[in-house]
Length: 309
Ligand code: NAD
Image (tube, rainbow, N blue to C red; front, side):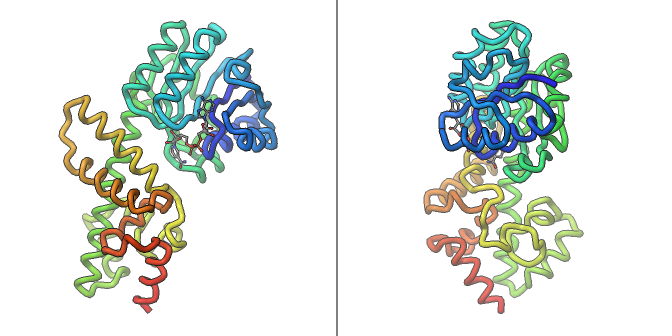
């Protein structure tokens, strides 16, 4: 069992750290927010006074922070003070450039590192079923894999430094675009007098089939577990979808890749967020496409249910 420093104990970090404790690791945690430290302590994490204190004696350092600037700043602060054999794992979702910079900082101090962003949300973090997308050397990945296991359903080694972040933003660009596509189809079906169930029954077994339709259907009814059936409470918040679509656009610009639908999806989610829906599940974009976006999506969902009755 290892001594692990966990920096960033928010919505995701806290349940992830709790699963490491359950697996028998000794976890030394730090977060800027006292309320998050309180939850961590209740979960068996040893709460430390700062990031430097948290890495003392740690073989592994995991970060779960909001954005690239936080990760780079924390790495610059702690990498010079870290134990020589320690392994740095960053699981935050950040831009590819910052991810590569974080790897460089670690390398400068002779530390092994991987970027290992996740998909699966707070539910997956709590259940220990996250998908980790890892980027870094084979040697670093081999060391990281058993550490990630108690938090993971699946762990994929995607390639060299930054590849995990690249995989994450490419996947979420597909997701944003496909959710808009599926939503548009339901809105058109409504105008054509086709029921939600009929479209679902056909498209879910035809060439229109995709995860946004069959696992996360944006209208209530066909997939009972989808957020559409509970007032579009996240799930995966529209604000986080926008964050990931923006990261994909930044990466596309840097890499000179054409992603016109990704750009359009980012614009639509930007508008949706600007109308106060950042806290709704991202599948609530269906209400925006219906033109009822100024209402709260919860009210819109109720109205739609009433219309259907
Ligand atoms: P969060 O805001 O709840 O947690 C981030 C935590 O980092 C906060 O508690 C904050 O106080 C702390 N923090 C910021 N700067 C710090 C510093 N210098 N030192 C110590 N702590 C610091 O966010 P979250 O939802 O837990 O997400 C974390 C990361 O995971 C983000 O990059 C996010 O995009 C990604 N992610 C989130 C989800 C999700 O569903 N919430 C899903 C997949 C990936």
